[in-house]
Length: 521
Length: 75
Image 1 (cartoon, rainbow over the protein chains, first blue to last red):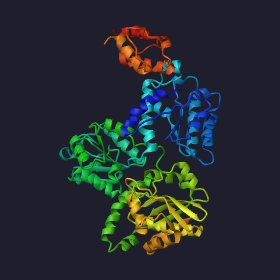
Image 2: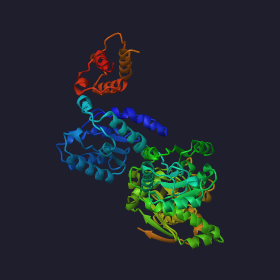
Image 3: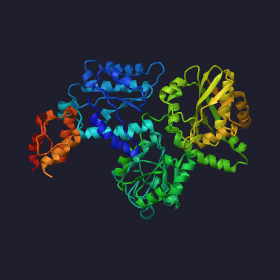
Image 4: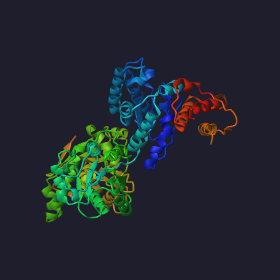
């Protein structure tokens, strides 16, 4: 089945996020063996574009297992290779050659198989079919064995170019900040009042889309020029609002400039402003934000809400290939950060503040159940990220094997459970350790957790017989906090150091840290 | 621009060859007029003239003049 008709349209969608597409298409290769051999170079992704009708002689589970096993075998023992995308098959009249039940069973088996493989993702044509009327065109099938319509082709191209590929290759947006008036509803809250602003189907679709983004792991923020009391009344008095004030991890409702408020939201969330996408109906407001904070991404809201919901469902960077593993904890933890700030301000000194927090730090050594979370953190942590390794799922699997040391760090305190928020990973050989990943979620900054974990793991390296440590620090556009942390202990930029010496230096800074440490091996 | 000129321009862009609208141009003249580019030509033709071809018409297109005859439906 030719991919060229789809790839004709993928490039324009990729230009939405300033990326260029280069496609190399294999020969027609129903065995897939040659295609998988090609995928050992510098590709960002390898797509197995399969006409599953050709394999209908097999049972659906057998067909799925065949391709999953081929992908696994092609990666070999080292587990290397580009991420692989595999398409499922759409049900419907356009594919009369195979029954819907066969296609459904194939989809289930592929879903399961790709979930088990690292860096292997499903292009869900069945889901795209449901979103696109007239998905099939038998004329195209007759001429080129390509069963999809032009509309379907563009829909598939958009899914690849604006959703799957940016999620694979670029750091993602983390915050969706929204205005209120003429964005989340129609009307002006300060003039119409909470009871009189209007909500149509488009606004409800937008509110549901925001909740979907929150479930996918994005942080919601509110940024509006209004009176706080009116906004609280609005959320309390309008039951048709699908979203609640508690869904927003950061709220700025005042008369400050929106650019200042968005920067303040970024500071509260310990994020760089470029992690924010801001949605507002007022072009003049957007222009002011663009001028004052050009790193913030902007979306012009449709006052009826419907188009805004559609834009947010397709915006490059607002797509997750896999479900976020800690989204349920995130909003509550971020809201707790405001209480932590109040505690800090009220405390006599930093030691009293830390003591009041009642921190419990769980250290997990080579804990395979955390593989997905480690991969997720590695690919979205930008500020406290010393090595910027951007580990693939295969890298994570390798680092979790015996012989290497990977520490995943979970944190909770009296105010919230933060979940797994930090990772330190070392390759170990012949008495030498190499630090290949050291990162911490920005949510956990400000409590010396990085020093606590680093001090502990250096002790563990000593136990494992490592005398020297090579530190693979990388300077990136936003990881100054991590580099400054390292500079505290290695002011002369040393990158090959004595484990004992560094352990002593780090240990001095955290010897009085009140956190309770629990080790899980 | 006549329909024939518009079709010649469309064929020229997809097949990456210069095509003189005054001359006939057939599928046999272009090595790269394969099934994939045939689809591209038909889809671009439908878009250009606001037409939807029947399956037998899609398969039957062999040359510039075939497309010109089909385009006359919009006239």
